Length: 225
Length: 153
Image 1 (spheres, rainbow over the protein chains, first blue to last red):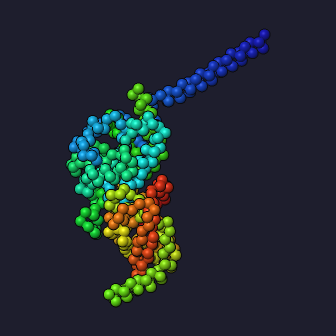
Image 2 (spheres, chains in turn green, brown):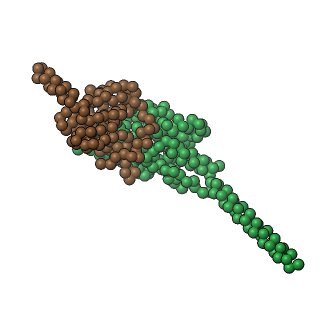
Image 3 (cartoon, each protein chain N blue to C red):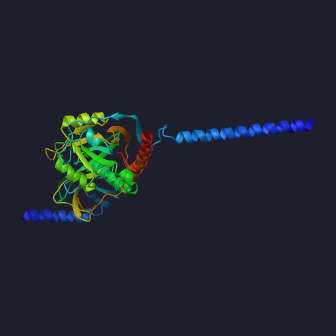
């Protein structure tokens, strides 16, 4: 009889133990499921997700067809934005080439591609007029957009975007219009409401950026649906 | 005229001597938009001589002028700085590559397309002239990989 009691007790312990393990596993599973819901921001490889996003209000800017490019024109698209200038031989062509590579890679995500734009903001309006900018960006892709404007409006826009740039006069000038412009190397991303949502840090590599973008796209689209 | 001819001959004599001083490989120009005012030239420059050699200046019929530049990526800023010359230390290789040193090729005299070949003359610190040929190529993603091991001097 004593032995039976002991067996019973052991049996109960086993049941309680098993239940505890099942509860624990269920809890783990549930928390993992919970982590997959949009409530937890995704981890990005080489980018910063701004939550909440920051409203940007560009003013006085024009696109490469000399049409106004303000908040209204930014709405409805995810826009990759890079600040540069066409007299830049190294970083800017390389970044535009990364944009081109990304545009090509987005062919396998047509729904995302239709909502994505690539923009070069020229911070060198003295040398880059709209017409020059158009020919320059469209060499990389016919859908790419060039934006410029007056110095004061470009400056205001850059400050809202957290971008810095500064004209740098070389010691020895071969020509009067020889100067360089130091500029932030980050790629900024505006969401379809025209808010600054993602900052991609240099070095830029198409696959890495696209992977982070698709993660953000899925997450933010999930939050809004 | 005779003096000019003599100078040319002198240059030729020196050029034939110069060919062993610097060994240049992987020389290429990145194709740009047709209205690009500047292009970048890249290459590996190896100095197998016992002396340090600098490239003092560069010129080409294909560009109005050529400068040496270094791109510096730090604290989230991309900066370009002109270099007076390119120093290649004895027994070392200087890589002109994306995100580091490059030739800044200013104001092309014609529209350059992938497949074109251009010639550049370097004037070296030992007064020799080195003539090199660069192929114009479309950019590739490979150049991005170079960024991680670019040289700080």
